[in-house]
Amino acid sequence: MTPSLQHQAAFETSKRLLAQIVNEGLLRASILRINGDKTTWLWLRRPDYTSEQTKIKIVRVVVCPEIAGGIVTCEEVVSLLRPESLQPPIVLEEETGRLSIEYDPGALFSLLHKWFDRKVGVDLRDETIAELRNSAANQVQWLKIGKISHIPDIHSPSIAWEKTLLWGHPTHPWHRTCFAQPPLPAVTPDDIPDMVNPSITFLSVPRAALRITGPFENRLKPLLNKLHIPEPEAGRVIVPCLKQQLPSISMRFPDAVAISTIQPAQAQASIRTITISPEFEFPYHVKLSLACKITSALRTITPWTACGGLAVSQLLQELLPTDLWVFTEAAAVCGGQEDFNEAKHLACILRDNLESRAEANGERLILAAALTQKPVHEERCYAERLFGLGTLQKRKAWFQSYASCLLQLTLPPLARHGICLEAHGQNMVARFCRETGALRGFAIRDFGGLRLHMPSLGSYGHQLDDIFPGSAIKTNNLHDVWSKAHHTLIQTHLGQLVTALQLESQGGWAIVREQLCQILRSDDLSNGRDLCDFFMQDTMPFKCFIKMKLEGKYRDYVERDLPNVLLTE
Image (cartoon, rainbow, N blue to C red; front, side, top):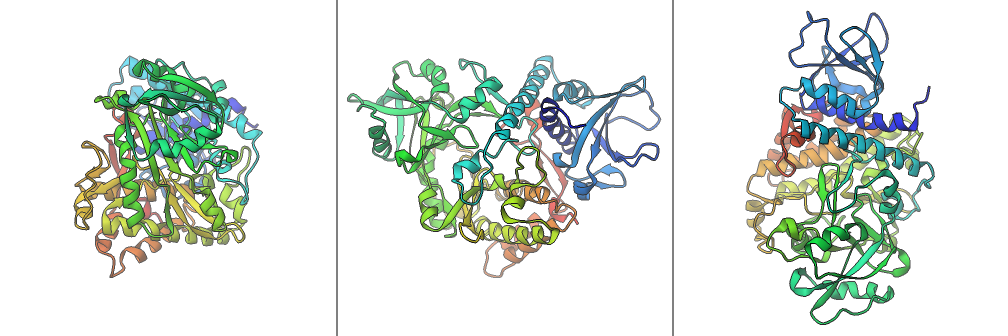
């Protein structure tokens, strides 16, 4: 029987929660069959469980054998478990032996956290349960949106591909969480359509209350003219913001005055970055602060990110390969308070819109993460639909071409200059030939999650003194840079494609290994062999979202070593 929309949405959150619990080692996990049953089950038990114990609650969930790949050895889960390897039902076994089916991620966490080897306080437990249930409730709304949405093709504009990310983050348990921070009103699922097509308020703000980077006013002026926004008074600046963000801004910027509110844009996948409607001919995306927790982060923009974008853009344009385009940040504004936690609530970054450049080049821009997504009630991902990958041979050939292009563009800057692009699928945009569908290259956007190894860059004369002290993107630890690249580029970006194309146990990782080693073991690439050896270690750090939540961390990673996915056979 097909599960209801509510159960389907709840399972999307629950399978991410269960996979993450396994990957973080919070519970013991095994793959078992019951009494000759051909169904393969994932069993979760408390860490101190022994086979002699019979009266104990156990959670089990079906494992999909077609894509489970190299997850298990001798029944114990020993490697990275992807949520897509799990299928309903989720069965709870009580001490009495009674079985029940559960979809609700909040109910699962309420049971399972008691088995963790760390105590979870009542307030944190309730907050976590609320966020999980919020994620599931919002997923229902996203599925409703998906059911009435047009399915894009190679001729569709890039904003259409931004809207295909119906399922949110592919592995995060809070993949569709959207929690507003007071004084913003609570976000309900019914608010999501308005967030996808947001209203923009233009504020008049005293110049003295702002930090302005680059020619912000000049770059914004053509849009203001087309929208008939009047010139500001002397000593004031017009700054756009999301209407939804106004309560947070008013509390911190009492002298800000709303001039006009209109709806001239559509939200990209991140929700806080918008694409202005084509009739206004505005050549920039507009990235705005939003005091909502989406997944695990508050989506405001700190002065480190707003004010450092121009310097980083210039660096990347100089050092990245020509086929790796940069969504350069042309100008920005943010709050002028010394306390960056206050200043981050009013911010605007103007980022180059590369659509016209791609159009002139005969290309289409498609968000990389969109290629792994599936339309509602379909089994094929967009990469399969778009490029006719109807056989295993075709999927492997296309993936080999994709992985080769991606690694050729991202690995040399990492090895040579210590530049770790945050190259997961939501930050990388693929560039395809409009006529043939051939992959031409990529474009990179969003620089707040970069890691830059300053000693390596310094040896080439790059100091980045314009970036405020305390910025998280600068580091002297080379292995931290390389580790983040493995997480975003290998585990996440390519890992999601391997899973979506059903190549986990069909040679997908062998393709990645071959391409990676071929590039990094080149004699003319400095640090290439050392980086290759680092990437090919038996274990690699895995980002622990739940432990980070329980320990109150976001920017400071909590990680656990897992068998390296690159070595999967």
